[in-house]
Amino acid sequence: MIRKFISYYKPHWKLFSIDMFCSLLVAICDLFYPIIAKNIINDYVPNQNIRLLVVWSIALVVIYILKAILNFIIQYWGHIVGVRLQADMRQDLFNKLQRLPFSYFDSTKTGTVMSRLVNDLMEVSELAHHGPENVFISGIMLIGSFIMLANINLQLTIIVFLVVPLIVIFASLMRNNMTRTFKKTREKVAEVNANVEASIAGIRVTRAYTCNTHEIQKFKKVNADYQAARAESYKVMGQFHSGMNLMMDILYVIVLCAGGVFFFNGKIDVGEFTMFLLYINNFLKPIRNLIAIYEQIQNGMTGFTRFDEIMNMEEEPEKENAIEVGELKGNITFDHVSFQYTSNDDEDHRVIKDLSLHIEQGKTVALVGPSGGGKTTICHLIPRFYEVDEGSISIDGIDITDMTRLSLRKNIGMVAQDVFLFNGTIRENIAYGRLDATDEEIMEAAKKANIHDYIMTLDEGYETNVGERGVKLSGGQKQRISIARVFLKNPAILILDEATSALDNATEMLIQQSLEKLSEGRTSVVVAHRLSTIKNADEIIVLTKDGIEERGTHEELLANNGMYASLYQYQFRE
Image (cartoon, rainbow, N blue to C red; front, side, top):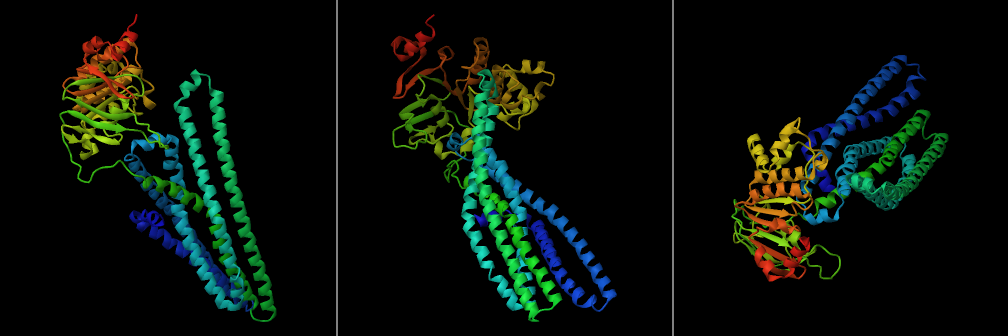
């Protein structure tokens, strides 16, 4: 995982190298002060050498000005490196999300994904900048201070460094607890985000059912869980900080006592003792810095671990030799297909069992029947949103698993009951059917979907913003924009999944006209509960949990007086 983290520095190695070089110079600048202080105390002041005192004082000022400039470069450009790494990781993560199977999104909350995409990578960005820089500076300071201390008095240095292994052991023992608590905190942040996302998305339902208090209580619970997780992480951090600071304070006491004894015995003079104390301060400073950023390191590495978890997930499977099929005709065949959604137990939860079905090119086939019969699942299996467990699905005699997903889905247009519009203009939402479409083609598609005239009544016309999820439009208007989208795509296969069930009768009639126009010359699979909308289908298939109950035209099924006839008579009993 560390190697993968480091690989993100590669495109930005020049800027990172400048940051590290400046950090090296800052560390070297800090090593000069004790030497100059020793000379001032032992030589320039006792011997009243004013000229050298002034010269080296000016030299120190120059060094500190240089250090200030270097620190600006480190702070500014170092953070730029972190931001660029964060942007690269976020782009990679978003690209990965586009390739993950639908089963991942079925079981993962949107807010949780957002937390990984934003919050976690923000922490990683801070680690990417401060981590290498602080570790590098601290390493230089520790090594440089040790060399200088050993040159002053090796025995005293050895006595001091006997405490260092205790500091390392303590830090190692605390590491696992800190990793566990910070990971838990990140998970709770994701829960908070998920709760907020769901609550805002469903704000109309909340207000309509006067469930504001219920939502507040739900948020209060997840917020309290986050607070408890954060409190636990701070408790561990408190133990770590207090323990480390205690050991360093003891180390400082040892230096004072042992240094005093050495001074009394004439093994070091006043200047050397002062220099030793200053270098001990230089030695402790990087340790304190490492302690200060330890929380940041833990947060960053926890965030990167969560990022890496998604990056290592299996993507939608694609055969190595999958072919680009070009334009399909639309002969669809289900051959003994069985499918079940992911389940954690061993029971048989198959939604579709041993289904065999053929849909001829250009025909309209309607799927009806009680809920749970697998109608929508069939619609999801054709474009390979899910993989079949047994059997196969082929189009024009080619197994859909032998096609690239992209070329397969280019041949399929979908209109669902729950229309999703992106927060953008009407033009942008229609153009989603074919992103390179001209304005004339977009308008032509809108005309075919019976939405052009309405659009032209708007002040901004096709540039009207539809709001998040199309909230500024009615259900029928959103549906017609989705139909215009499919007209623009012009696919060989059309899937209509409850496309009109949420609309009023008048709007349904208008939409139905658009859908009939859209279905002309295409292979159409229609899922409908309103049987009036599929009376003209070439074939109607009644599906139950046990498979195909009956099939035929509207007239044939009514004459059979079976399940379809019962459903039809129930809907039109008055």
